[in-house]
Length: 322
Image (cartoon, rainbow, N blue to C red; front, side, top):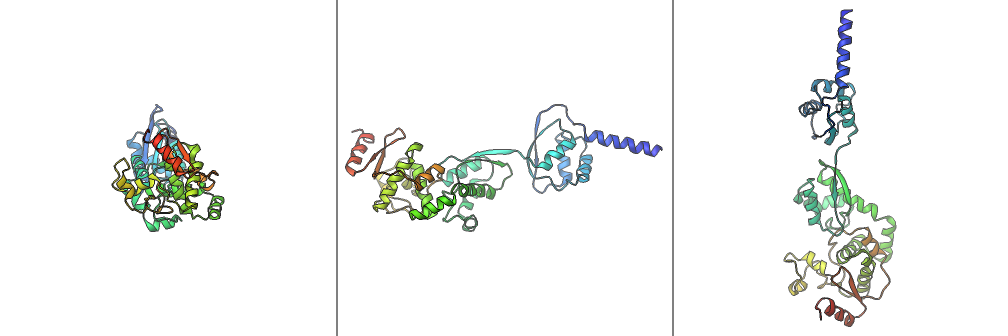
């Protein structure tokens, strides 16, 4: 009988410990489970952070619930006044803390890598190495020599421990979610490959200062392609020139690179930035126009012209103040 009393008393103690918070306040505690950590190590870390009062008891309870191997790595935001039972429930659910990563439209790979690095997911070099890794590119079904243009601009949420490959894969998968099979059919009907459409869309994205002009800019580029005129897009010159110092000069326009559309006919070697959905749509469904030229009015809008004479007048007016 005495033994029964002792067993009952210890059982009540265990139940009470598992259902009693180790702290009374509701402050948030950032707790991290690192990849490869054992249950004992996790329990010890919980105790050291003041989230549980007895690491051994937490370990025993997690094993009793068969949860010892079901605690996903990641960063968790846990209220300090949770009971051990509630903490285990939160960890098993794997609701890790997510961090926002926003990639604006029109960024190139280098700029995207810098944002990813600043967010703490991986260093820029690792990111860029993966973006030029031919096996990785092929595995993602990207028909290009790099991932330039296919890192879709959007707002993403990742756990802090997300691997660089997973970040890139998510961006590319989002591109293929946006670029529907119907758009692929449209591209083929127009006589363009996927890479060519993304290349053209990236140029439109970089040229457009306001969203409403994208279809008109697209019409200019399509019209110039149809007439076998050079595209003469400044952003392509900038992208392909390692010597660019912030201002386009005559030497930049004359320098032959794989991207300088002042020195070649047709499209450059590949995309020069990541176009958004609207730029891709404008490329596939351009406005109907006879425009062959456009020039910046220095207020994010452009003056569009049908003839070189009209274009030169616009250049003198808006660029040379004549």
